[in-house]
Length: 145
Image (tube, rainbow, N blue to C red):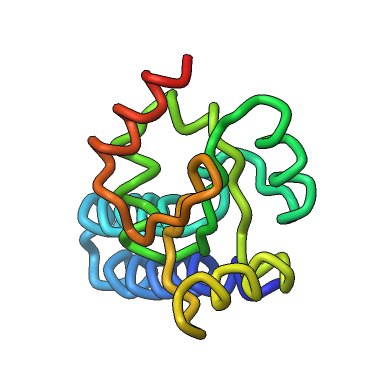
């Protein structure tokens, strides 16, 4: 299991334990609601809500061909989740690189951000933008299409 799944698995485990305790105490309706909340939190903090992640070299190659931005992210990052959710379907136009799966991607982010793995980092037209406003990114995407 890679570390991208540790937080989601812990959330499901904690939710299951809490729900089991609630079922034993006789409140199965509350248990179901609690478990659902923990499963939803696990899903949001997992790689599942993000478009398929590629390696940095492949993302850069694709970006050179189609001109779409490269986004460096990591699971569990609330700013990455905010960017992904606010972009909606247009997020699929971008090339996503999970820095926990791709050491070269993590190195690229460190090189851009003074040695820090600050995400999301969006590379647009060769220029890095660290934690950009989602509305600005959406505007840039609409200009390029």
